[in-house]
Length: 459
Image (cartoon, rainbow, N blue to C red):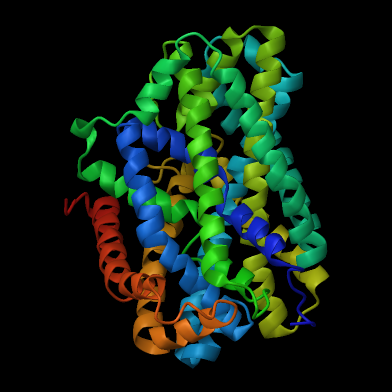
């Protein structure tokens, strides 16, 4: 542990792991998923899956990492035997590919922060057309994305306690302060309560299989499960830490950010009589129009604050996504951390170039004839996030239940939580890991594969 470094204490770990979970999925993806899937009903189903399915999986991932004290590949290999290392490698590859496109979207957020705060974005009339032009402009995207990757690498290169933990101690509280400040303002707007009612008052008629399916996918993606990030972070914590309560704190913090993001965005949307069902364009197309309507000064302050919030959320996740492959090369190949961080950052940035160019800059990447004419960014996001992460979570549950065994996991969790063994929490976690998670995540993986590649839906 000493040679690898580690988190200095429980709070440092919880903030870093919560930062890994909190990201674009909470502030960008969650609100538009909720808007498209019934508002309050989606929120309720999302909360249910987060605590009933995703929390036990998080406990399992952290336990694997702490027991082995190694990266994702090394952890599976050490605990399960040589061939199980492939599962860890699968997660690492997913993390690399997710970071490759995630960094591009983070660059958009950074560019929008600058354009709203100091540029002329709010003077545009057609924000949809602007977004199309902006994402197709590879010049600006290149600069902003590479800046984001450099900032990420600068933090990761400084190690666990000196880099990741220290940054998380600053970023996470600041993120909450900005978010709460923006919410207070949004709730003062005319018709804001219409947005609150849409978001907090459930309409049972909106509950359908699509809402349930989307909520499970959002919960799983939001918590950074299935790609080795929490296994890696778990390898940096002491044996006396209580994994069960730490995982609960991480889950609550992640859910809180998603919940507060909805409480911010829906009052803003309804205050201007806009529809909440715009999908991915909700943040980059609808919100700028709302900020414009606030006037030149207030619009810049609130709009700039919102996209700064989005940048902070993205940065807490890009840090963990980069640390996953860094830990693999440092642990398994014994390479110096500093060189590994900068080489990997450059490599992943280059891997992300097709995603960057796929928004109109290069037609060959913008419309893949063999993938339903979707963009390369859509392809990477769907294959390595929507499809691969549920598969990774399903296989991890199978690994714990049938290879490592739940009694060994309980023994590991018992370090730091002596009352865990025999408790109702242990029974709950074991049932989810052995039965519910493999079945539900397995079905989710199969259905997503069929729908993405064969246009067949099981539900």
